[in-house]
Length: 261
Image (cartoon, rainbow, N blue to C red):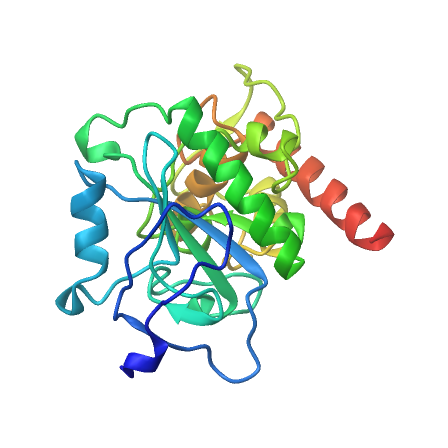
């Protein structure tokens, strides 16, 4: 890593502190940041998370970290490739690190109690995200969770994350989920045209999934990711009426918005 690449000045006026990470490189040729990826740190202490993200031996980094009190630390310049997405996929792209800006939101995570995201923190996420989106002209449907692009291995920022509040602040897309009912529900091993329809819709939206008509383990992971983002009332990795209707609504409204835009 060239010392010339280390962060020396903030990209946003909202930044409270700089803590450069050496785990960086140029974005690959032809790529620009057109996707905003939100994570949680999954560590007990935000300062320890920042320290880990700046250690060469960790081989991870991100552009920003947001503490529970809303303090924003920048670690990587936005025009550089940070190492936050890992093995991932979205809408045909496999090098998500080269096309994204990554924000780590401090939260202990599911393995350590998974606390709520405080109001001050979510307000900071909304402000910073809106600033990034405006400067890079990022589309609403390109504001995603780590679990969206890597559903087979990631579950952050999870079902407590306030995606609706972000959308109300102009960040990302939100549609009202269909209420959960006691009707039909299909789990692992099920085969159905409804499953094929769901897989097709998930793929149209951007998820990495094959249309097989069978609810296999890979499909269950994608359903879990979709539910954590869009149908948070019940995250069970199953296909049911609520999930399918919510998915249809999301794809319909997104494609209508693209056509208008």
